[in-house]
Image (cartoon, rainbow, N blue to C red):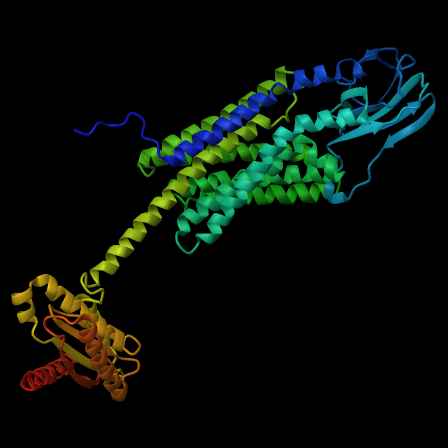
Length: 553
């Protein structure tokens, strides 16, 4: 009795496990970035988050400012600004920096109406004149509901500041880049396989679009693109627009995966997304409401999409229209995504100064989900293709003669039936029969007989392959059917070539019984008469040829 393996994992799942372990290991390494950067800077930085005084004499921190416009100042007489700058990240705040009564920096970015009111988050490196005693900040938050926000305010060498920023952002950026590449690959797979399997094409496209959109959405938190493009408002708008369209593709994928593509939920969801998109573009361009204020609508639609996805899965489980293996993969993938989102929420709420982006582990969870689902469908696609290929091979074999490789009687019967429905068709039927086959089989055995048959098939095929189709219709019987170029003279030339090929075979192989083939030809017009009549006529002429050849010996 064959022992059952405890773990039955094929190479696809080993690949998925390997990729997931690399991602998780990479994430764990990234968690140590914070301590490393502190050790690296040590005394090379000065934190200016605290020590700021309002006009009313209250002390505040830049990371926890009160609502509304505010002016604050801080003494910096004891700070040496040589080879250092005041570096920080501002969030949706216009401001001025004043050094000892002199305005040295202002940030009131002008942007196109379609980009909305705010710019999101941006990085500033401000040179402070050496000997400055007091720095004054005039802060004007863009949104009344949010206070002015300065993050990670340091006096530091700008190269070190940007180096640390990239060190913190690159892990998340790499994850986003991997997801974007994965999305593009899945979309290309859906395009390249469109002619083979339309159902899986939709699923691959939905997965790919979801992967690409979540990568574009999450890359905003890494700050890498803001630095590279110097266009934070553009990156911010793309982030919000991506969030609008993000919920459609997971639901579309689930609907396809559980065989519910015709569900009415998808048109409803698409309508909600389109309305949300139009509202965002119109209201933000008119400066009535900003993308930032409308993000709650996008989040509500995401919740609706989540409920739709859950409903589709539960419905599929109830109807038993989902394979158990896919259900397990889907649960594992969704679990990874939910876990990653939960970790990011906890980090955002309880851990200050996190080094990766706010969506870092959400991206890791989503990437694990995509790897698991993607590999599952690639595996299923490969299996279906293999089974389809095997079916095609079996179908071809059903119409081929196993000994000679010519088409068999079944294939000839189908062609014969097709020709009966074409009364305008003219064709030539040639019947062949090998002489002395009984003598070959009786005196030299069936292996010699098979060799004789193969030689005859080769001679016929070589002579007629350009003008007709060759069939083995019996033990030593063959038929050639000439339809498109039904010219008697061409057929006669081919018969002469066959005789030459037979002669060449007999001379080179010197078989114990020379190969000899009798044949008979008949021209037939499909005008009401059956092709059987032409076959009978060709058969009669073939036997006449057989008698002539025997009497000539």
